[in-house]
Image 1 (cartoon, rainbow, N blue to C red):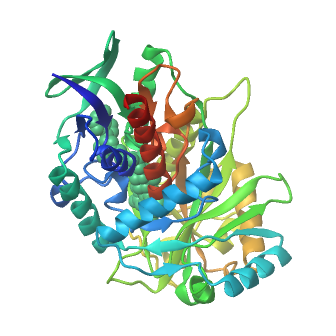
Image 2 (cartoon, helix red, strand yellow):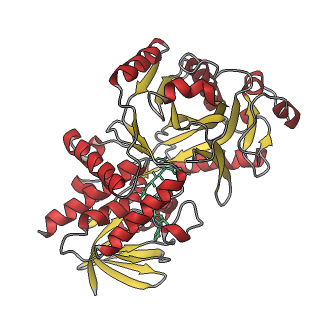
Image 3 (cartoon, rainbow, N blue to C red):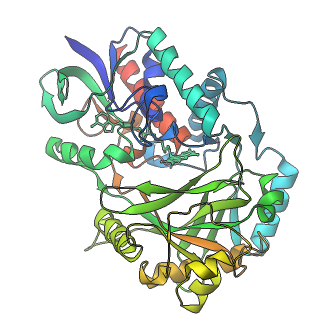
Length: 442
Ligand SMILES: Cc1cc2nc3c(=O)[nH]c(=O)nc-3n(C[C@H](O)[C@H](O)[C@H](O)COP(=O)(O)OP(=O)(O)OC[C@H]3O[C@@H](n4cnc5c(N)ncnc54)[C@H](O)[C@@H]3O)c2cc1C
């Protein structure tokens, strides 16, 4: 039996693509290597993808999370798609509270930021929270099942081959044939997809990389900003290198967490619905693009991550800001004496400048000094810095309208496509691909 559409990955891109196709005559299957939302233990794999174990910060702005021009989506079209994604989350149980809606407060924050030479990207946000998001994803999953979408779980796709009438996908549960494929395996499946698409002749170019640290500080310092926009997006162009450094994934009263990879460890952060800490954290990331002749951002990012893991003895490195500024390592003793307590304990107090390239460290230090004018107290001696935090957006596909690659019928969507960086924009690319398939079929 041949399906009309096979979707690889049940993350937000895959699920929203399926939702779009659910009420059509097309026969759709989702192939997902992980488990249903309530049985999952993996942070990255399973129904809901990376979103299920996140704290569900939904960025509802066309300026955050992707580049609409690169996928040929008009801003009117994009605004409507974002509204659609938000409405589905509400229908599935997301709390109806937003931040970033008060124009007066946003304008004031923008002015304060501008005076410090910082760009503030205002946008509406919804914060679902770690516990609630799992229930929301579970509702979405059952809705799709009720509407006839077939899920094959614990089914990892291996080789993909082009056939006369579509594609053959070899999976751990046998071969699946489909006329069209939407490949949405997320960051976790991006390198697997790169291997497959190279064989199909539509492999990606190297995309950019964001390298930096997680900054943790007393929650009171961020409270006035949190009231304006929960996860305020602030961008700094540094004086020395003119590089772009941005804040990302702010977690008021949240926790720093470790992100284990096969041969290195990174840091991340989240905020929970019920359990609150005394600290706020955000990622501070330097945007890097490598140009000819060295374009391999994957190799570069991995090398940095591995070096940092070596210096940290297999744990993230923790350093107080003053030590980083003065070029000396932090010790357990110095960390213990601080007025702020780290929310991540499995760390190695050390020297981040031994692990990250000098250009990145200098960019980060300059950015913190500048951000202190918007978040007074951020540049205090005791501010905690965890390293490394790296966002690999390093596979970027050339796509035509509707996320279709040069190979007719083969679509890419979500973070693995290189055109999204978050739950909402991934969903948008999934819907966009699904609509294109639907239009071609009718
Ligand atoms: C800890 C954490 C916190 C985050 N917090 C936020 C947040 O607050 N807000 C936000 O917007 N974003 C957040 N993100 C990012 C967000 O989760 C991702 O941007 C989003 O989930 C990407 O969606 P996607 O559909 O492209 O891929 P994913 O959600 O990664 O889903 C891909 C799915 O494909 C499956 N898969 C991969 N390869 C195969 C294969 N070969 N065969 C079958 N299945 C396969 C995987 O198992 C996975 O379930 C967070 C991410 C993490 C890790």
